Amino acid sequence: MKKVVLFFVSIIPIAVMISCKNLKTEPVDNRIALRDDTINTVKLSDTLVIFEGTCRGCAYETTTNFDVYDSTGIIKLATIKTIDYSSPDEAGGNISKEIELVPTKTGKTIVKLYKFWTEEKTAEDSANVQNFIIDVVN
Image (cartoon, rainbow, N blue to C red; front, side):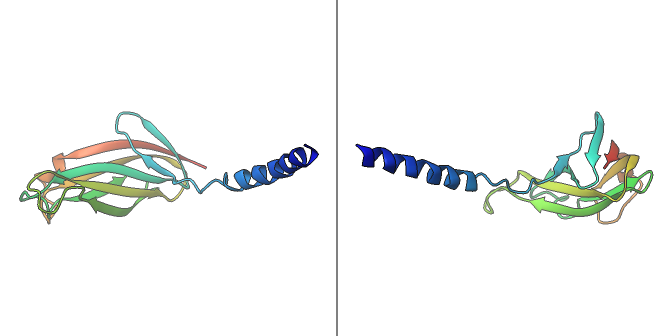
């Protein structure tokens, strides 16, 4: 009986050490989805994301593009990712666009996101705009 108790007493600390080793935290992905109906308070280290989309298989699929205007110059456009979750043989649907922005310094700003359905930016398309109020803190 002593051997059985001694065995379990020696196994428990090893099991605790192994389980604690597996609890290491991975770095947090600081992607913040921006909303246009509120003030977005973000950190300087965050990546800001605006989710948009365009039709799949339509005339605008390849010509949809975006432009960003920042009132104080503290937000920069980083990348625009195109993601198609549909099967290649599927007709129609939607293509997701992730517009990633990065803050360069602290402050409060208004970011305007323009969506264009032509390769050239035209005055007719500039009416499609979203405003995002962003407060960048440390």
